[in-house]
Length: 381
Image (cartoon, rainbow, N blue to C red; front, side, top):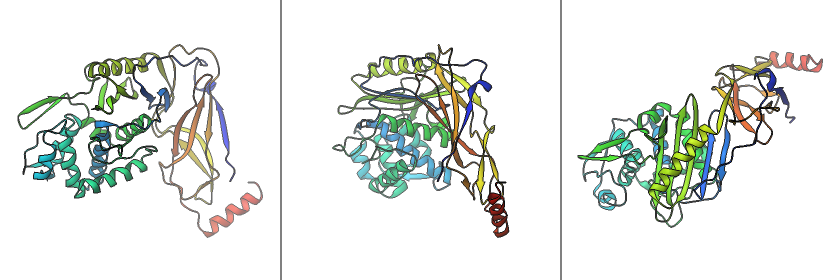
């Protein structure tokens, strides 16, 4: 089927044309990746698709599965889950711990705090067993959900990222995708659980190891990880003036090195780049023809505020926009369904791809409607 590409120039949208070479950055991390969520622009990438052990960064997947169940009403925050003797014996002092008591019952909310803030290995397994009956069954849920949200090169072998002879493997790009899905799909739960400075359980207060909290404005997540095998890693996010960045570093050789590099990397992302607004949420960007539907043209709208990410020093040249979709679109189409993409290109920059969604619901045309549409099509109307 033919794929129409409709082009728009940016001159009608911006007061000044823009372009500049991408800012350089020298990372101390063997693996590093950064993306701007407002535009989809990749600001930095080093070995972003290399498979690595995630250590405790794998816990973001465990939390995402729980968030999804909570959103669907299949899991309650005040629901209590038991701590079995077997799980307590294995995980009470195995790496990071929430120090759960054997035989106790703990709410889902407390377990999530224990996972996100304290990085509790025991909390992960208790949550997994409470949700799926066994950790193995929960891991199946993790891998299925990972595939659904686009983690193309990752697999999980347990719920907490503990070394498992290479079964659990992720990539920096996939970790950023997971962080993005968490922030976008579960904003209220993300805000509630991912930015606490500390958490107290069983009379023990432990700090959040997030290296950005209190050091970078707008920092509010996500998760550190460390094992001898993986080194020190971190997947983080911060929002400043409506602009949100997601970063991943991995393979660093010290705790302090992770702190220093994470702060430096995130500050570079905000200072070396700028965001130029394109379309506000709900704004119609273009229209597309609809085949055999209750309407002949569909407005393509911005599902959220869309912006272009450019180097801070960008000044003089052309930026182009194209709306791309597989068309004509076929009914039925749900309102809010992604049906097109806005592609932004600038010299010396990777293209930035943003979603466009249906501004209206389009029902499938009835029998006479399809006949009439065929007649109009025959006459080129």
